[in-house]
Length: 236
Image (cartoon, rainbow, N blue to C red):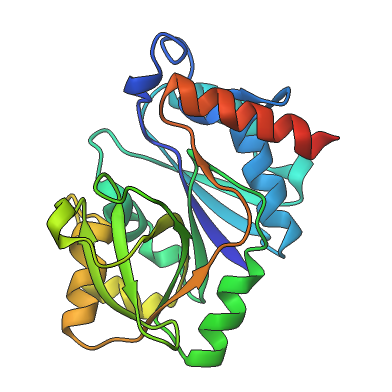
């Protein structure tokens, strides 16, 4: 099993907490967020992983190293200029010769990722997306599903009058390498804004799995505190 962890963000909204360290090294329950992520991936069978880097890259490399402590072979992809969530994957396309996970490293959860793999295999999906319920979806990627869990519509940050679903992307995907043809090389490209809508237009099979456990996006001081509380509970 392979995975890509997206960890290149600057953590601007978390400043000053991220003035001197990247967001993926923020401590949760006494452990850096990236530590939780890599142990989580290893727990579902991931043995090889790419981490993309941009802000303070040497700090991440210094902490994670080659991944030996996690039982995961880790390589890095440095982006002098940010390429977006999908562009980052396209940059290391040669790595993905089998279905793989993509994890947004600033979203904290310990939900069972094997749910994505199982649904993908059952439906022959090119992309399977973890989704969770949110009352206000206007600042998120709204995901509309049919009765079988197939994604029929995606809208990034919909206007209130355009809301037709309260499920949003969690930033955890299970993808077939066939998705790479929808990602242009060397360009900024985003899964929610660019890739998934193009795939829906081409009538590709995209499915969603509804999460039944907490997820917290660590992007503000308030959500960081909530994630830290959840991490402390998980430790106990």
